[in-house]
Image (cartoon, rainbow, N blue to C red; front, side, top):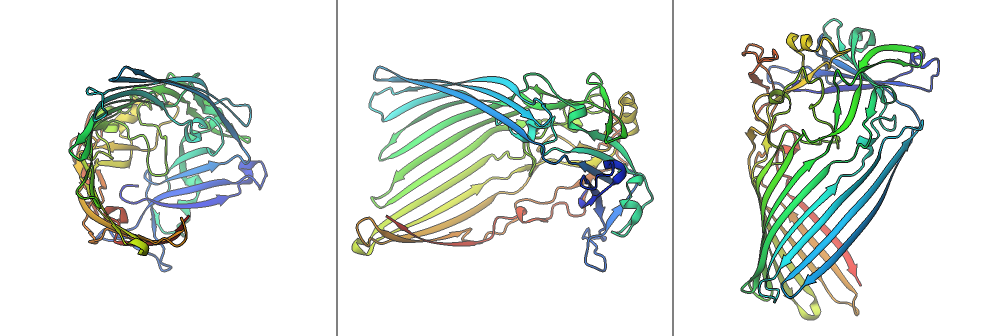
Length: 507
């Protein structure tokens, strides 16, 4: 929560909840900030452990109720056809299409996917001189996404246990021995997700579609070769969850215990989330000498924007806030449009390879790579911000409301990290022994100059409760966390100098 996220997991065998079956555990995860000093560094207890702090209306627990031996079978049957047509000396065309038939069935006879998808693949090439030295090309294609169980098992209990989410309402305190903080009776359940009870799929739910267009020109330049490509990709048909008044609600009883009434979660396809990408790509190769060549690759992103990242660390195929409690949230503060977190204006790779033949003593290949990465972007947001009274009033018709929210300050990707310049080298030696038998050895040194420049940093901010409020009653200003602007993880620096030695035989 806020700048820190401290989680303690445990397994409780609750006979009241499981009907006396001690083999059916309920798994609690307690979520709390950890105690810090004035400098923002963690404070440890006498046993060297982090000290959780318990604050009413801030801490939460997650209670997972797994169903053992649940299974899902997702079957994809696909057909692909393609034809290449040479129209004279100058033109050629590729025409293709892919058909996918996807069906799934899970424990309990639950149907998750029952859909058919058709995606085209088209390409054309034009050789103005008819000798292959200069070629213009263009492609247009649709690509359907994977039918991953992380999305398409959401209405089953397969790897997706039922869950209860609750907010702490007990007394303030701290420490791993603070009993009220680990007592479920001191928490108020605000949300429940029981896949077989209040989670539904719209008929025909299908995977996202990526539409890609490219146009390129390439040809020989003296003894070398160069190619310029324009690439454009748009993603549509996202798998999105909707929690609305129209979606209804369900009274949930699990193993004889009633947990209350909660909104339904309905999964459907939507074009409202957006991800758009445009780039220019330059590729070239030039032989300076018979034994020395220079090659390069440069990508310049013209646009990598949207209002939805689409995934996170260890969370592929997640949904966006769009469609959830629409009366409470707006785009500006909760899913703004802007530069996505993998936006990178320039990415350059230059490398050279030198081949030295030593006759019966073997061959030596030496290479060097220069890597330039322009800065990535970051957004300013506060995780787990509490709902404002105005939001609670707007959501009064819902059976329950979320316990927290992610609140943005400014457009997505409003901040910029730093660039990096790295050099790698490699040496490969092989020697002929008998016929095609060649022992070989390879030495690689990555980040040769051991560049340790800060290229990323902590971006934690919290709400400034003293700043003006927006129409939803949320503060418009933010306060930087104690570690803002500092490197706090290995990912905030280039990977340190590394040495790799490989040995092998070719035959």
